[in-house]
Length: 317
Image (cartoon, rainbow, N blue to C red; front, side, top):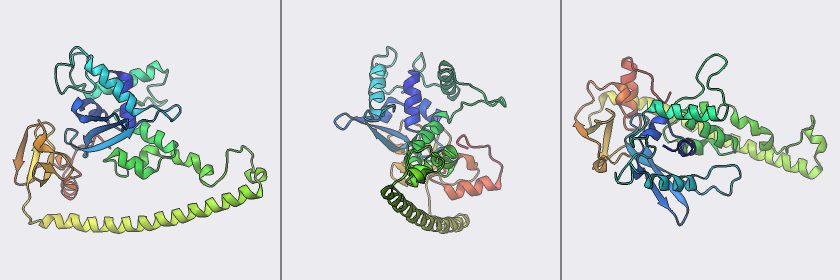
């Protein structure tokens, strides 16, 4: 594999190690006229092979000290086409091993650690904990975007299936820009207002009022979200008495179970009719562990099943 390409593209697209390792060349679509790279990705963390959610990046060469996803992807694609073990294989791994196969999750993490070593970065914390893992690229990308000022909700959309986990990823990163958010410049004075003229002060007050208005709007949205979550809880309870006929499909490569939405497609967006993965139809969820239920297709059923019996921790948590 190309370690630099793997690390940077995984970071820009906020991928887990399993998503980077299992990706194939067919997951990429180029628009060379607009200089864009689109990546077909899983919409569910339960099943990394159930592709159906696309994320697109354009050229970022105008941003100083920022990797360009489009040109990185073009360079990587050319490298793949010149690779002696891949060019004749058709749909090959995007990040192949030396023998041309998909790398296991452990090897992807080993790659991150090797890159860190080359940059003289510590691999363990003072407490002896490993600092690099399967979510290294995902967390690094989220923190980088947050520090650059990208709105948290947009980062969440880019991350696809993170939910509120993205808030834990970015932690206090957005707080580093609080002074700029309040209209205060980069002054190092202990009393910034002393170095600001009347016009600058007025502008700062205007920006502060604008921020307060935005906060009030966000609080209103939060109230609506809480109401929606309350309704979801009612929906979970209603799941016990579901009588509408449903069709389920199990991805035999990952064992994940999905809910069929329309012919050839699941609720999470997986186009199983076009997939080369073997599947089997299921008429009921009886006996299926909650951890195997797609959290996008079967959120209520998964919640109930996990609550009724023990389940292993999710890779994403």
